[in-house]
Structures are given as C-alpha cells and as structure tokens.
Amino acid sequence: MSDAIDQAAGLTPQDALYQTRRLRPEFVEGAERCRQSVLTPDDDQGLTADVRLALAQRMAAQNGDAALQRAYQAQLAQRQPSAALLALAEGAQPAETALAAMACHADLITQQPIQATEQHIRLLEQAGLSHPQIVALSELIAFVNFQTRVAAGLRLLRSA
Amino acid sequence: MIPSVTLKPLFWHPYIAPVEIDAASPAQRDAMKVTPSNQKISEYVRTLVHDPESYVARTALFNAIMYVEGGLDRADRELGALGASIVNGCRYCAVVHARRHVQLAESDAAVSAIYFDRADALGSRDAAIYRFARRLSVTPSEATPEDVAALRAAGMNDGEIIDLIHAVAIFGWANRLMHVLGHADLNK
Image 1 (cartoon, each protein chain N blue to C red):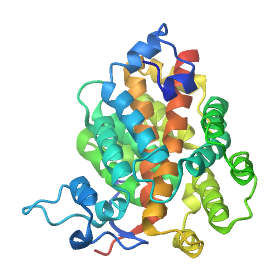
Image 2: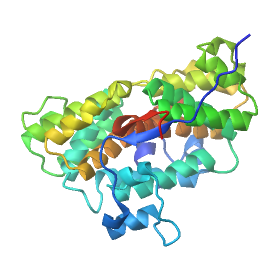
Image 3: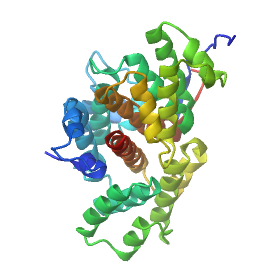
C-alpha cells in the first residue's frame, strides 16, 4: 500500500524504487507510525491535529517540498480550520500568542536548528506551552524535517 | 599529516524538567520500560517521555535505521549521522556518532579529517557519503543528482543509498531534539 512518503516522492507500486523501499519494512511501517504519533496522536497534549497539520504544511513549504505541502494542505482542509490556522499554514505570522510562538519556533528549528538556545524554550514557556506540549511540538517539527529529507532523497534516487 | 582528534564523551542536560519516575503516568512508565530492576532511566529518555506516543514510535524507527542488519555498513550510517549532526549544530550527537564511527571503522582517520576541517582528505567513498549527508541536511535540501551519482560510483546500490538517506534523515530528527531541548558539556 502506498503511503505518505511514496506520494511525496512520486513513487507508485510500478516503480522499482517503490519495491526497493519495501525491502526495509521496518523503515516504511516505522515512519508511518511516527507520522500518526506526531500528527494525530491518541493523546494530543492539547495541541490539536489542525494546529499540527498547519505547522506541518508551513514546514514542508520551508523545505521546498511542494508535494508534502499540498498533502498537508488537503488534510488540514478536511478539518474546517480557522482563518488564523490557514494563514499560519501559508506562512503568515499569527496574532495569537501561543500560535505565534509555535510558528516562530518551527521556522527557526526547521531552517537553522544550529541557532537554537535555551532562550527559545523559555519563549515557548512564556507563551503558555506546557512541557508535554513543548516536547510534542519538538517531535512534530523534527518529524517533518525527517520526512522531507526522506522524500527529497528518494526523489533524487528516482531521477538520478 | 592530519593529527588524531581526541573526542571526550559529553553529558546532556535538558532545558525542561524531566519526568520523575514516581510521578510518571502508566503510558510514560510503559514507554520508559520501567521495571523493579530498571529504575535508572536517563534524563534524555525522561525528558522525551513527556510525550510517550512519539517517544515509543521514534525509538523503534531510530533503532531500525541505525542497527538493522544487512544493507549499508554501520560505519557508513554513523558517517551520515555525523554529517547531519554537524550541519544541524548538535555537538552531543556529533561526538557520540563520531566515536561510534571510529570504533566501527577501526580508524580515526575519517573523523579526524572532518574535525580538523580537512574533508578534502577523505577517501572517495567517505567523501561521497559525507557530502551527501551535509547537503541533504540543509533546509531546503541542497543534495543533487551528482551527489547520488558519486554514491553509486563508490559502489553503493539503491538499497544502501536508501539506508543512508534514512540515517541522515533520522538525525535531521534527533538533532532537532537533542540540540533544541538541552545542551551538552563535559560536566556530568
């Protein structure tokens, strides 16, 4: 069965690379379980799936991944998102404090993780995020950056 | 002649309070595999287990990518992890995986070249892996078809390149936890 990474990389079951990817079922199934754990977890720690999808769309765009950006956009659209979340997903800076802090943090950690300092965690605390929310947000940011790199690598391998 | 680098192990300190074992929820205790004989859980695990679902899923994927049998040599996976960790600025991960590379390769030549900024002195296979790892780690990715061609020229097949892509990508993940949620130094 084709998954989010196949779709992002443009792989179909007819592609040799689709089959080669299946030689590592623990990578394929593991990435899919991780995707669920950061986007639609059973316990969302108060970070709802629409917020997570909006951030994911924003980070996919920053990674230059048009296919993943569209995929997250479509999943977000199914959840009747607020105008504020749609704007966040498109890269605007939100007005609301917690959303603004999460968007700002996601931008920095996606694009320049080397710049991260303790102060950036304190800013999330000051915006009202709990420690479970800070960890859940960190895992979401980190996952999207994993997923975009797998997709980018597979696209290169397919074309080269 | 490039000197041998000395890399002392670093200790990681979180910016947020880790979960205390006594206060852990059943889901957190399950995730940490707390048992009567396993009460000493690292600060790193107790920090990430604030969100047990992602902790469990990521740990399984990480272990598969770095330790699964067959395919790409384990030393090559560590070199991919090192390249990613340097780009992403995670000193802790860089040192851990540089040391593993030295053990697995039974030589510190490659790691010394990298730490003394002499990547030009790497052998052609290590150079191709290290370059691909660095370029795939930038946001957005700067890896090119020529980088993949260099991996193939070094003798890697598509299955091995898929293993390398995952090793680099999972450090795009791990570095964004370790370097973001804490800092590393020589003090225990």
